[in-house]
Length: 256
Image (cartoon, rainbow, N blue to C red; front, side, top):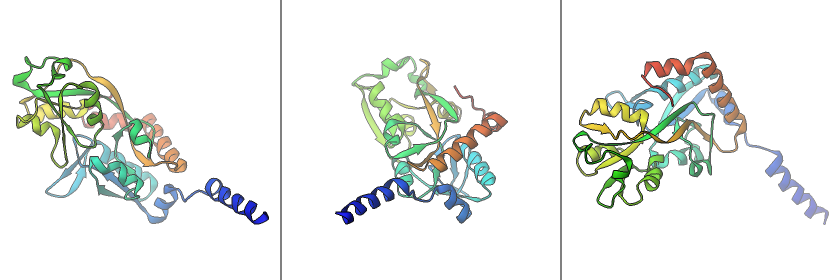
């Protein structure tokens, strides 16, 4: 009986009293911050194929975080469909910004938010009269492309229940389907859409207003309160210091 009670107490002690080493301690010991990033989201994270180096808003953020931690940064390639799995499988310590969603929050932790954006559809500019509103895209004859693993993939099901939905797997992207004429439209973040219509003048944003404001944050391992608190407090300090405002000006962004 005593042994049984001891065994129960031991299990309770292990599961509730002893926590694994925080990422914060591990990062400081290793001297390296591992960052998962897709490198295909302009202007947040873009990978230059010529140099294999990353640049963008989030890349600047992570370089600053590593500098303040006193460690070097290592960017780990990720894809949207597996970016959450990279956190749970310990392939990296943190991710560049992703949209907070209930599904992702089931298995990963989210830091404090540092950017808010709207969701907008893109169509070919020549088709704007045909698709002047969100509702005009919600039709069984319409094909909407999304990138596999993104939050927009789930939103498309909500916004366009009547449409044919096509998920595109990275490294291909949803907007490329619109450019090629294989889809009538796609939905993406307002921050990416504003960049795409400049890069590809044949694309246009459906002028019906952004819907369903979304919040960007970094993903960290679920349950690691020490690491999450550290990064969240760091974000708030950087917001107060004007760091994020400076970056928004650098990349010509404006949070909602």
